[in-house]
Amino acid sequence: MEHMKRSPVCSGSTRGALSSSVLVVLMVVSTVIVCQLRVNSLQPKLDNIEGLMRENKLNDEAARARRARRGATDIIEDFSPPFEGGLQGGAMFTHWGREACAEDLETVYAGKVAGSDHNKHGGGSNYICVPTLNVTWDKFVDGANSKNYLYGAEFENPGTGFFSTQNAQDIESIQDYDVPCAVCRVPTRRSMLTVPAWTRCPHGWTMQYRGYLMTGHESHKGRNKFECVDRAPDIFKGTYENKNGALFYLVEAVCGSLPCGPYIANRQITCVVCSK
Image 1 (cartoon, one colour):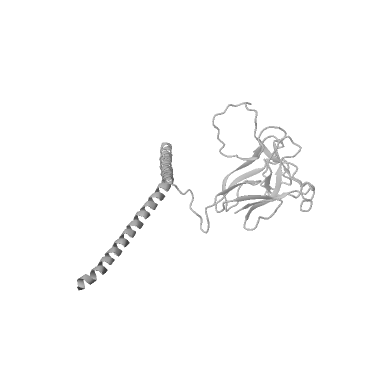
Image 2: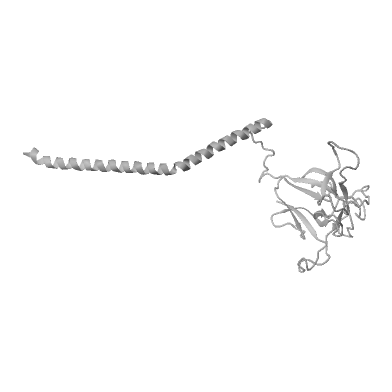
């Protein structure tokens, strides 16, 4: 009798267990179906990513092959060690008017300023610093061929009192003397800035030198860049020669075209070269 009374209870428990199992199986199946649908929707994207990876691998292999043909390697070498207290430096600038860089800088090379003739329409429109030592030639033909010439630069009408003569070997006037130059590297700084009409650098910048803005004369046929020339140029006896090739003139402000408040008519424009 006790067995017959417990049988309905056991039968109900069995049915409940079977129902729970079916629900679990249905949930698992539905989850698998949803996941499969999501995978199917993502498959094009996955195929695209796989294609990009395969393409990048081929590009890397091609790049390595090109480097191997050039005799290069995959090793990246440090060209210069980092300086203590900061990032690597190496900013470059031309010190117009001086034949050597400051003691804490590296003088890459020194020479003379050169450019196109001031009275010719063609030629270059910039000044360059050409070395005066170890000048080398490749293939050349003597005689006038291209008829496109490079001339030395001279100071022209530099005025009185603008430029210091402390580096001028007791020369009273720098008129018609050659303009020296030096290409400098700043080992601890990365950026260079030339500011016209200022004699001090912006906050956080270090002054390399200051001077006056100079360029060719506006009445001449040639066009030249503005350059900041040191107010205490290196002038040497024996470099005077009035050839009038490329010329350096002081630059004056034009009130009205420039704001008349800060700029005064006919005043010579200063400049400062800064690094950071």
